[in-house]
Image (cartoon, rainbow, N blue to C red; front, side):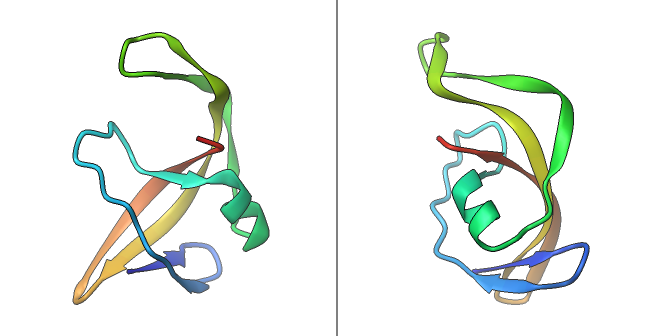
Length: 85
């Protein structure tokens, strides 16, 4: 799978874990920083909840990265939440 940045069209090949029960798309914030991807800060952080409804101790979601997800002949523009979880 590849991800392509929407701002400068930089492409990265990644191995992805797909989880059909997740409520969104997530990317490790350290990966984002390491590869210099452009993050946009959210006006208000989003709390991360565990499956039992309790707040996750590690992080909140405070930024988003606009990417194009590419797999085989398909491309999907997607906002991806950056988090340490």
